[in-house]
Length: 442
Ligand code: GDP
Ligand code: MG
Image 1: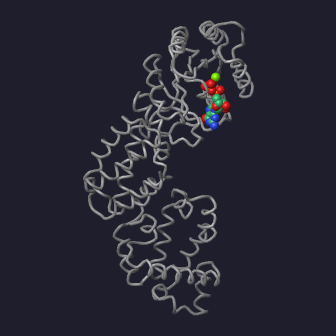
Image 2: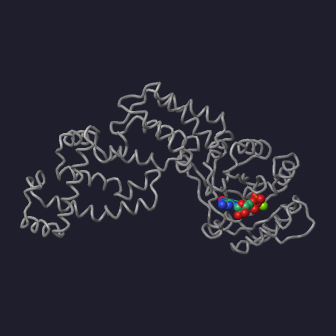
Image 3: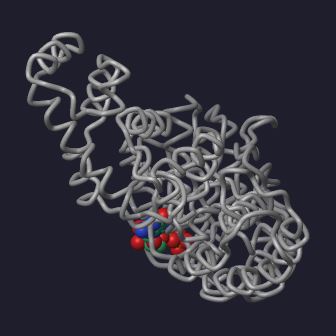
């Protein structure tokens, strides 16, 4: 996926507004990428239509290439469709205690685990008194499973009484939570392997008996295309107020999130990111959008670049480099640019496919502290020295070291690095811009 979108990017070269053909071609690839990410076909279609409308003729930022502009539009539209960057993901407790939260979903989707995770978080973070009750009378030991999780998480569970049916247990739980003075009652229902009438009828009965304030649909993010069906049916039949997406730690691409949200309009509230009790996160549309695009955080990199790079300055510098005039002032400007983007770590961390090892290797060469000291060295030089570092002799180097609080060896290292960079710049010759344009393939 990354490679494919990368290809789209590199195909969209040149500046100015995007042509319709450029956009069409890119959209074909994005559509394919979405389907690969398990986004349902109709959702992918309507998504592409929206993006196309926005992208055609879209004003391209001075400093950003059109390809990235398209990706950014795609990303922003994804965020929008996922509920927006500022979407409210909180679980509402604005009702008379005990507030009932009912968890529904297919078997194995992560209902019981998520129930305990949410209960634990509400207990420790929100200081609420929670009771959990398992209504799963089908799977052997399902009620014990919740009880054990409750003990681990320090959350009360309804005492198990053998032979009771789900509706009976639900009623008993509401009563026990009321008598016990609990703020919240979480009902963990039974699932089935597939959606069937039996399941829906049972959950509907529980709903009518317990009158939940929130009904959270728990869905496995690896479900893929089936997720839409599940979300639609549960919402139509039971009424869902929020979605909990589990196994986000797996290698699913999060397409299920987009489909479910788009088809039902129900907000995704929480993400399950592991088996442990604290592997629970608030849903963040931008994170999931990035995941669907499968491209690291390219978008924030583009945004940062747009904020921090002065396109005219970059072009002027490119011009000088073409002529082999990369002097120490240019180098200082490059270093400052990097600093504004959060340093070496900031830049690398945002790039897709940069692993930990590569990051460490790069940092060994370009530690942020070193970068700062290099800036100090350069600013301790005279104008003439910055333009033509060859004039620096031993005594001047000593003076500069004293002036910048550094050592002569560091100055020598800097000069060597400058020579290497100057050579590289010359070699890059016809390419535009500096280090950053190179990063962005401008
Ligand atoms: P239920 O049948 O819907 O109640 O599903 P369970 O809560 O029993 O979960 C089924 C399995 O999925 C268990 O082994 C859980 O540990 C695991 N599980 C649940 N949520 C997550 C998650 O977010 N990430 C991972 N990796 N595993 C999860
Ligand atoms: Mg269960």
